Length: 216
Ligand code: AP5
Image (cartoon, rainbow, N blue to C red; front, side):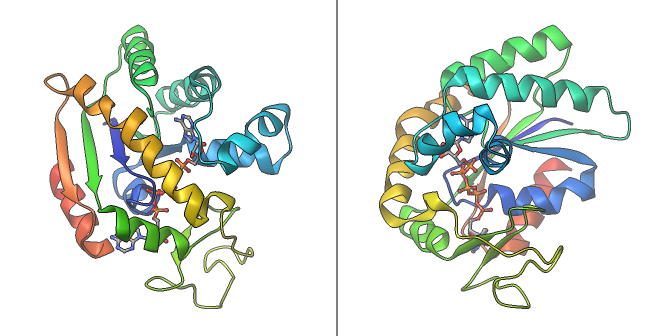
């Protein structure tokens, strides 16, 4: 089963992917996490993308496609996995077209797109309060999902971070970029792949239940 988790920055893609991954034995592939890892490790790629990400702009399709190619083919080769769940990819119509080609060559396909819908004000509030674990990628929120010990990841004890791109003016730019460059992907999939819209403003558990219902 191959899914695309689609939605604006802060709509809850990472939070839901973390919960669905084990339940359905899927590989969670987040291009944002892959790029942040490269920045943290100060690789050549990381140095190239750091300022682009901090400004809330998109990294070039070429770079992201290279990352995706390796990861998606790795899942196919792993028979313990039932498939993958893409989070934050595709992000442009060009990426969606390239993914179509990649999957066609591999004899694979996307089974569904789950769109998390959340309004802009709620997103700005959520992202301002988000804290992330740079190590195990767990996601927290100082208002509605705080860690047991302030500033420390419950899962692995790593110090939590407030992402550089979670500052108000960068959040606003990311939302504009989403509207202009990412939303048109839904038109690209319309009529070809099942698109399921889910109310991402519901409490986290209810959103999970709704996605599970869609999957089943
Ligand atoms: P990326 O990491 O993909 O960021 P994003 O898509 O902007 O999404 P976020 O991680 O911000 O949010 P999310 O939807 O996962 O929400 P979360 O679950 O954390 O990309 C970062 C950057 O990398 C991009 O700007 C770009 O530069 C680059 N990049 C990445 N992919 C790229 C690509 N394909 N092409 C080009 N460039 C790319 O939740 C957010 C908060 O809300 C948390 O605090 C959480 O606790 C809370 N929350 C979640 N659900 C709920 C709920 N139901 N109710 C209340 N609170 C909730």
